[in-house]
Amino acid sequence: MAAVRSKGNKTTEMRLVRIFRKHGINGWRRHSPLLGKPDFVFRKNRVAVFVDGCFWHGCPKHWRTPKENRRYWRQKIERNKERDGLVTGRLRYSGWLVLRIWEHELKNEARLMARMVRFWPLHPRR
Image 1: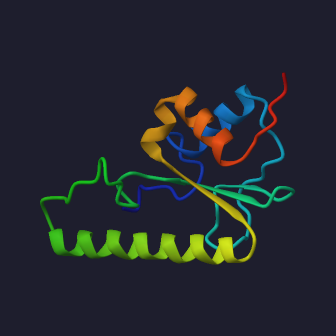
Image 2 (image 1 turned 90 degrees about the horizontal axis):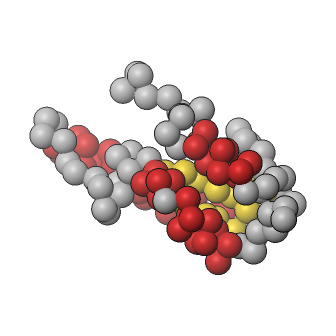
């Protein structure tokens, strides 16, 4: 677990950075001290974006219980999911839009962009 990086992960955060830049989406900041430490924050629009890893956040599509130490991993992932729900609820209560993106969603850029535009009308450069 020590090898798992909490920020700057190339398969998640950096991939979304490239997508944002490619589509001219700007105004975001990273490493915000906002509750839950969102991966990207658009302060002007009060939008917090979290990129959740399929394993660490218990993706219903991809998460499988590891064969070793099953009880530990189930409990850990359940705690992560509970914390995610609490953070999302508190941010929404404070007037923030919260977008949670699964790691696997980054693979289909067109579908992800369509979801983001439906969620929050982005204004990419034309």
